[in-house]
Image 1 (cartoon, rainbow, N blue to C red):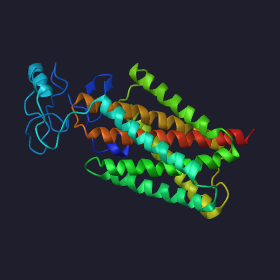
Image 2: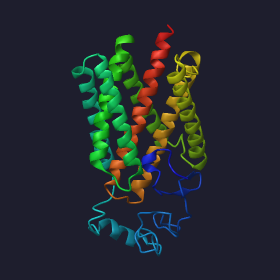
Image 3: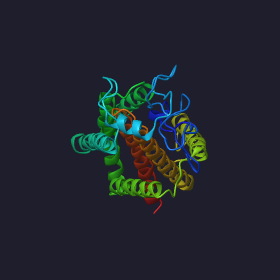
Image 4: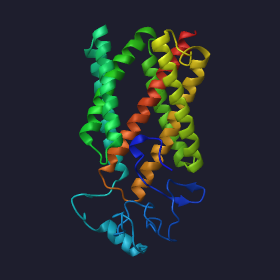
Length: 301
């Protein structure tokens, strides 16, 4: 099973601890959860197995594992192992660029059709960069940072437009996004939410259905005019807005799981860029869904 987040779709992080099973889980040797018995278990385990240079050929003892962690880098490809601090720093960098871009879009670009065109262009360029990184084999920090800056410009212009019609709505959406993040982090750390195969399957099915419905609604709106199927306005808009926020919260839990497994299995340090990219994508998703939901609720007042 793979993550719904495209930046993790090629990763084989796995863990099997009964009730809290991971993705692509393999049964691990007792006392050594890091060693992989078969290719596909832990892609970052050490040892030459055909077709998987990371998989372990023999289970490692605790002493061997300790020596591995204390040993210097084996070569130019793996310059260190990913840590939570790496993920936090890179996520702060990407979110910082989103904020800088948003400030430019809000304060520098005037409210005009030209600014709206710039925002749409930035959004399309950000989408292309996001897809490029999603299908790339390695993290590309420059692409990730460019995506964050362009996405920020789009969010800044869009938020300014929403703020003119619904004063304070962007601030409410930001606070709501922060609340969702903190709530999901607490729920994940306390194991109120367990990211297992069933969880991932349900979220993936719901996400694909949601995106498909939104695409159909957009097509009807573009070619038929009005609100399309009405999935983004009125009572249906409120329902689908709540569903969008819930899906974003579920994506956060899956992102947390991927970060935790990456740290546990000794992923290369540059994988922290992918973790930051995935978290940024999810937080942008939640913000946009909350912004739209707030505008619908306040428009009905």
